[in-house]
Length: 377
Ligand SMILES: [Zn+2]
Image (cartoon, rainbow, N blue to C red; front, top):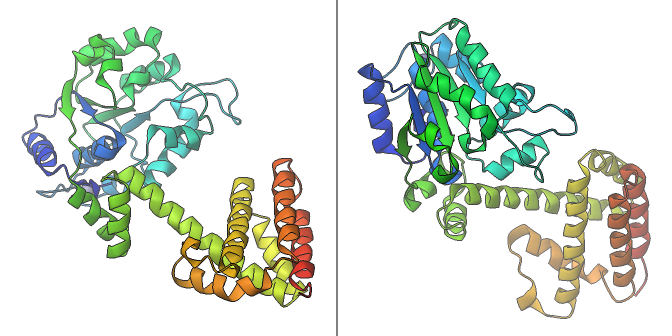
């Protein structure tokens, strides 16, 4: 994450660069804004800039040893803290250090994530996550040590409003009198939920929303979407980058489902057992949720085929390759087999939910489809 990866926020970035160059880095700064403003990406890019030993006038160099460590978020002088909760792996403990790998991988994948996406990554979306007393102890422990490589030690805390209240006094003390060259970068979505005692010790940086045009440019140039698709998605998301990225991911998943489904139906139509089994082998390795959504996609295709057969073309909302496929496939989905195919798919979904073995399930379903596609009309 560099300053150039942050969407918009040009004025803020200039200010942070100036303060760093003038050696006026404030020791506790609060980046206040929702995920769409890029508060977290900006804080991470800023930390990289502070630690960079080859700073350029407008960004970190990307080449120095420190920058290379930042490429994997592995610099030893930045300590990340964030809300966590017991999950399937760690059933009792709550502490950031247990989940550092997950945290790093999410930021490296895409730092524009919502708090809910973070909870999902942890596998705790229905739980209350907190920054725990153990986290506060770890912060104090880290600050008791010397910095490793840089003169600056950075403590980055995501969603400081989730700080467990009874743990706050420990943190207050170091916020008030931090060891020299310590920089706290706090990120928050909601100022009203932060303890006043913490708020009064920080310099607040209010993050404005990026302009719609800036989001559109980012979708095209940073995320590689074709211009017309980016325009459509940016319009649908109302200029929200997190929503735009969610929609574009959905779009990608949809295309992957389509391509896999088309391949599967071709093998079934030709009754090519070897290819069917190979396809089953690959498909059965995907996650259960993915398999379920794939089968739901299949049901949608059969529905589209029926609409197409009844000449209800205006109801078939498809375009491009998918539309072409439905037109060619629809004649083989008819009154003799539709009900049975839909029944078999629904049954497969129920079995998936009951933890059926996916390999057996997709094999059985494939041979049902082979039989049903060859029913004479
Ligand atoms: Zn550098």
